Image 1 (cartoon, one colour):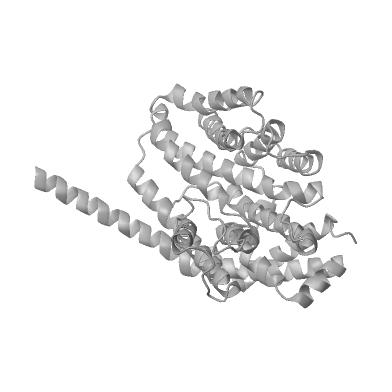
Image 2 (tube, one colour; image 1 turned 180 degrees about the vertical axis):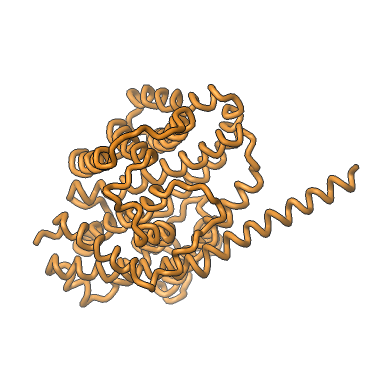
Amino acid sequence: MSFYAVWPYFVCSALILLLANTPLLGVADLPPTTIPARTQTIDGLRGFLALAVFFHHAAIYHQYLITDLWDVPPSRFYANLGPIGVALFFMITGYLFWTKMLETKGRPDLLKLYVGRIFRIVPLYLLLGFIVILFVGYLTEWSVKESKIKLTIEVARWLSGGLLLGGDINSIHTIEISAGVTWTLQYEWLFYASLIFTCLFARHRVLGALLPIAGSLAIILIRMWHPNHISLVQALIFLVGMTAGSMKAMIYKSPNIPQYFISTVVLICFLYVAFGCNNVFETVPIIILGILFLSIIYGATVYGLLLLRPTKRLGDVSYGIYLLQGPILYLAFASPSVRSWATASAWDHWSIVLIAAGALVLLATLSHSLIERPGIKAGLWIFQMLITIRRRIGLARS
């Protein structure tokens, strides 16, 4: 078996679904938020996206153990798997929040939105930050190898909640510890900040519906002259998700498309991008992923897979799967004997990956229960407290 054979991904994913169907993940059955209206297929999709990023990094680890270089694997499928997960995560964010802008006619409660985002994202991120710092301390034997000012800045970046990109600490490369997943949070925060301005367009029905479509077309044209501008690519991905929200708002009633047909569209789009594209972050793959995403928005269940109980459980703990995969993979391959086994045999490599995936899902479930949900509740409490303070100040002024 080749180290980059495709079938281990599907077998490991199936085994993880079996694990998710056990009582060990029963805590994930409760909804993580109090939001009643959510697209079930999106919730089911999240878990697969987080696992896609995990298996992308698991494939990277093989050549990393041999060459000590952290780079995309020499397999088109595994090289594309992670970016596909990230792109669809961004589309989900764009869709959900733009839909909220349209539903509130551009007048959302921004205080509630930002407090909710802070307490949804930051608590688990801080856990990752502390884990990275702990690993760095262990690797350096708690000795300071840089100036104290530089070290303080490096630590502060890691504890910024994703606003700043965490880099090396105390001359130790942290990308192997974190798997480099935190870069996406910076784009998430930029998107949330942009809602302060884009919500103004949502106050007008036509402008709100057309803004993401016009924005997508404008970026596609700009990229003809600036094809390598990564920020434009990420903006386009968010706009594609927002466009799906606009289309859902304009065509609220889902078209009567046979389930097997629309699920097949999703499968074909995924296979084309995964196997047929050299770079997911190009215009054509993003458009194809947009078609995939729109199909899911309009009810594609991928032959019922996205509605299964274990799928929904993985979706609920997907943030932990995504964020904590780095430390799990790092520990899985930390032992020199394990590294030797993993590089000698593809079977051993993927067996270790499977064990790491199971441990990651269990850790994500535990952190979901002990950190994410309490963080969400704390955010609601803080929001209510701020509302109370604001009302009292208003009464005092009057």
